[in-house]
Length: 78
Image (tube, rainbow, N blue to C red; front, side):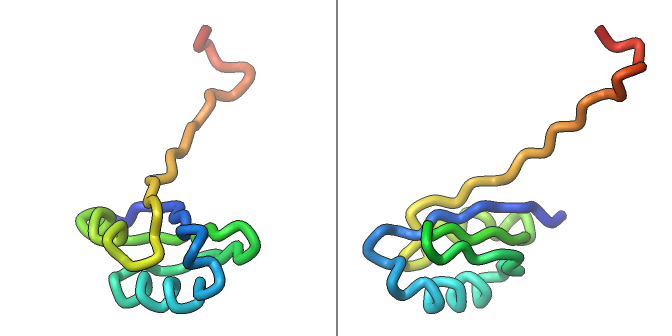
């Protein structure tokens, strides 16, 4: 099952973010967005590969994205 993730790039690796992106893609990440100025990469990956992405050189954190679904305003949920 695919999981959406947000990846933070280490401060000392932001100048080589394209190399980090290439390494993440080799690790199975389908990159959706690269926010170069702030060192954040978003994408999807197979669930069992999430932990491995944290071992990529230049990655400081890998966080799963959570989705919240609110009920419609006229629902019976209180």
